[in-house]
Structure formats: structure tokens, C-alpha cells
Image (tube, rainbow, N blue to C red):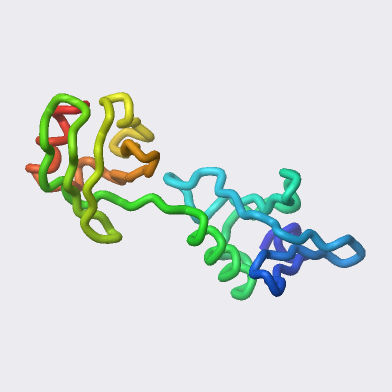
Length: 158
């Protein structure tokens, strides 16, 4: 375990906000965990930031932390991050935009409006991020893992 990761403590205050403390330092109330690479490496490269935007500590690997600190960080990240992962594209209303998409995600079925092809961004070789008309981002972790029909529908927009 990295020394920087072992010399701090995380707790929650009465309002549910994270409190970061180190020996002989002032405690920081309301710290925010931020992933450096939320899609490609979500379990590594996490910074704990003060409310003023200053990095308090860098965590190389989340799993290296003691269970209590790791669980608090995971809970905080889960409450702040919302990016459903598309498992299947069931229907697209039109191949011209805007179009309405019906998809199956890891969080259930969803329907959203794609305003334009520019709202589909490549993140990696086979990873896509799709923004709907309300600014919600959907993730396609691996285009090649989608079923044939989903890939065919998606190819019309790429």
C-alpha cells in the first residue's frame, strides 16, 4: 500500500459528507473523490479533492485502501456518477436525427432522444459514450460485444 494512502482517515459527518483527516492537520469537510479515468480504469487513479478544488491525496489503486475508506469512496462515487451501460439497442425511430432510441441498459430499459451524430463520442477503440438530449450519458463499453442487430443500428450513426 502506498504510504500516502495509509496515512489518512475518512469518515462521514452528521450531514453525510465525507471528512478527510490526517494526524497533525486540519480536517477537511466535504471532500470529493474524482476518478482520473472513469471509463477505462475506474478502480485506479482517484484523487480526493477539497471543496476548494485542491488535491488532498492521490490513490493509485482503490483496492489497496482499508475496507472502511474504500467503501466510503465507492459509496460517494456511486451517488455522484450515473452512466448507464447500454447492453442492447432495441429500436431507433429514425436514422436521421433527432431520433428516439429504445435501449436495454445495466439499470433497466431506457428511452432517450439523440439530437445529432456528434452526441456519439469514441472513447477508445470499441468504447462509445452517447449523450441524450437531457445531457445524460450512456456508455457502450464494447461495441463488438453488442448483438448483431444493435451493432447494425449503431453503425448507421457512426
